[in-house]
Image: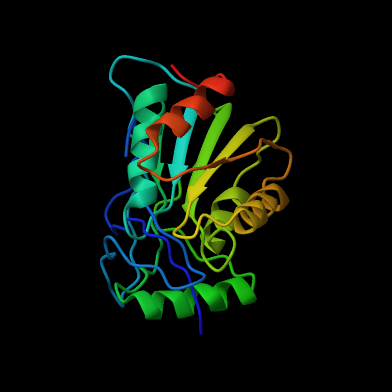
Length: 214
């Protein structure tokens, strides 16, 4: 079995929508940078959106992270844009074991599952622009991204996906963008950002080209 989990820090703690907050992918075996906290019990935490202290914003940075890379990327983007930040926390945390998480992710993809979110906000109506970050798992976005997108009326929203993976395979990136478009009904899903979390020059260029930088 080959899989590629791209690292992202899952933390079954309260989710925050804030102005700042890393990841790897599932599809050909990749090294982990940081394992998630494991638990057999379901997690239920209050939804919180962390907001900048000095600015009002209509932009939300949403991310799911397992090993830390997507979290790092999301935090940087939120800082650069003055956006609110929200981490998607699974109701049932993924195991800290890389292979076990890969097996679960593969089954979720095959079943087109929608894993429950522990800290889903009641509303994101106040946001016009939503940046959605995730690792590449089994050649596409994790199914929990579909859970988030399908939970809201996204009519008129502008969505900008961002991701990275160990292999940086553009076909897998394109597949993940297609998944986002299929599940973001009514929204305009723009061409996404595919860059390593450490490549701040590429991130800055994307934000500037799309007029998102603060």
